[in-house]
Amino acid sequence: MLVSPSILAADFLDLRSGIELLNRGADWIHLDVMDGTLVPNISFGFSIIDPVSRIARKPMDTHLMVVHPERWFERLAGDGVSMVTFHLEAAGRNTSANIRKIHDLGMKAGVAINPDVPVKRLFPYIGKADMFLIMSVFAGFGGQKFIYESLDRIAELRSEIQRRGRSGLIEVDGGVSSANCSALRQAGADVLVAGSSVFNADNPMAAMEALRQA
Image (cartoon, rainbow, N blue to C red):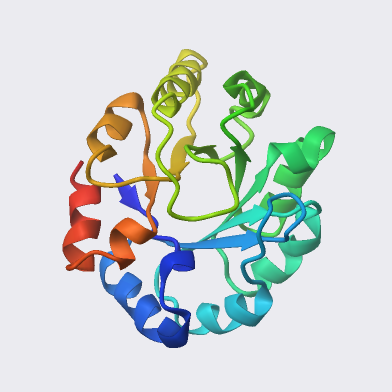
């Protein structure tokens, strides 16, 4: 199990320490970008991503919650981002083209959906996208409670990937903690995004290891 903690839950007055923590204990560093339009919140843009890219030693995993994700791809590639995930709700019929653009820039491509989007809408991109992000809360705010119906959605997607004989990581974001990480693994998840359960833990290193060993 890979652990990709979201810096959205870090202390932004001491962000360097948060990144150094993830350099030591995380598998990936998760960057949640929100534009206040696709989701009802604004997080950060390149004023944060640029300096983070200079000190990050783990792969950067960027989740674009924005209405025009394609506008971000080139600059993210320039910052050395490894994985770019955008929302199916934002891209619509341009989803396949966006996947190709991300690949052409040397990055891996992910497609995300919110809890109210049928998981079958991801099926056409199996074999095209490198990863699928199942939101287990509604995108836009950290600290929400995990939606347990997400387990069935993960299992359905994993089953279809296997039925087609294709590969593809399944990432889960929202309310992830030590209380549900084992169930997520059993359902078919490969990558866990955790924010407050890591950064607010008494021992963040131990919290990351507990998620990894689910």
